[in-house]
Every structure is written in C-alpha cells, then in structure tokens.
Length: 268
Image 1 (tube, rainbow, N blue to C red):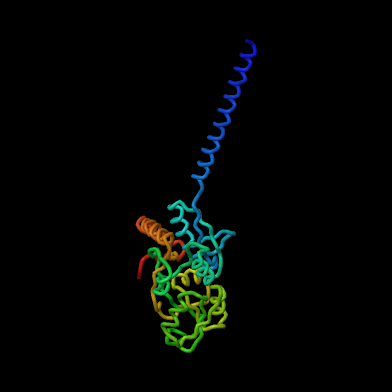
Image 2 (cartoon, rainbow, N blue to C red):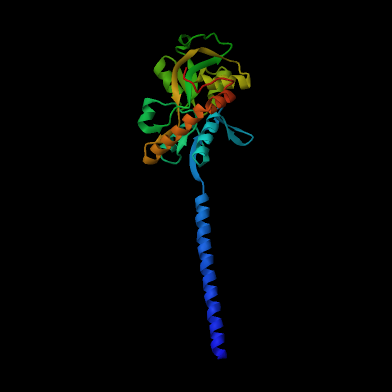
C-alpha cells in the first residue's frame, strides 16, 4: 500500500513538472512574438550631410530641412530612419543598386530621373540660379557667357545650366563647399545652386556673394524610389503623409525655419 502511495505521489509530481515546462515554453513563445511585433521597420535614406540647410551635421547630429521633413514622414509611417552619407552622385548610385531606399537631399524631379525612379509628391520647389562675388561686374546671365561657373557633380543645377546656355562653362566639384568656396575666392566666375539654398548660405555666413539675374528654371523637389513593387508602395505612402504635412502647415513651418523665412513649399 505504501509503495502505491509513493508511486502515485511521484507520478503527480512528474505531471506537474511537465506542465510547468510546457507553460514556460508557451510563455517563451509568446514573449518572442511580442518582441518581434515591437520591432520597428527600418528605412535607409541618403544625405550628403554637407548641403546646408537641406542636410548637414550640427553637434554630431544630422539636421536640416530635408532631414526633418523625411523623418516626420517616416515616423508617421512607423519607420526608424537609418541615414547613409555620401557625395550626391554616390547616393544616386546606391539608390539604383538598392543599397538605400531613397535620397533626402533636395532631389529635383526631371524627365530623365522619372524614367528611373518613382517620385513622391513634391514637398518643395527650387529655382536654379547663379551667384558671383560682389566685386564682379556680372549683372545678368548674358554677362557670364564664356565664363566658368562651379556646381556640384551629379546635381541637376549643372545639367540645367548646360541646357540653358552652352556658352557658360561648368566646373564640377564633389561637394557643395568646394564649389562655393571657389566662387568666394574668385577662382571661378560664379556658382550655381537653388536660390533657396543660396539665400540661407549667404545669410548664415554673411558671404560676399550676389545673385546674377533671376532663376533660369524651376523644379519640383521630391523623394525618389526605385521602380519596384516596394518602391511604388513607399512613394504612395509618402504621398499621403506629405499631403498631411502640407495641409497642417508643417512644411511651411519647416521651410521658414531653414530658409530665412521663405516658404519654398509653394510653387512660385
């Protein structure tokens, strides 16, 4: 009788142990699923980190108009942003090869680029124009015929200048600083960039530069995505959020913050 009682006690203890182990496994599975559901989606975006005030580093952090617009849209869509820094031509190359999802660096929408990418709606507008040193006598674009004008390699401003007037000689640089500094130091006759960026740069650094005439072309600024199913979905998702930021005044607020009070989110 005693042996039967002991066997029964052992059997019950074993059952309780197995039940506890099973519960632990189920709990572990549930915990794992919970952690997985809490994982954030990641979107990789490119920036030169040298394009004031669009994307630049301040106290070790990437900031700027394009950076803030992109991060607000991404956050609203549930994405965590992973920034990739390179020169502009390198960023567009990484976009084509799928190493990054998009470029947030004041990318102009052109017919050539539309053949390659799905663009979001425009979140800003750019007028390409030229500045020169204050000491120079250039007052119109006609005065720059046969002269050398600096610009960033791969930027659409340089291509627009070549199309606008083949008699103006472009000189390209890998960075915006290099192109601008040569104009400041009179090593070139002018420097081409978007008017909004030039206004901000001149105001920030009290630079000895003046505008030569009016912008010679205006373009939409948007986020490019590759022409894949994922790229198409991202562009549509971004469109909806950009529209919300436009309607609630966020785009205008950010523009005035970075471009000396100017609203570049409205087409001129």
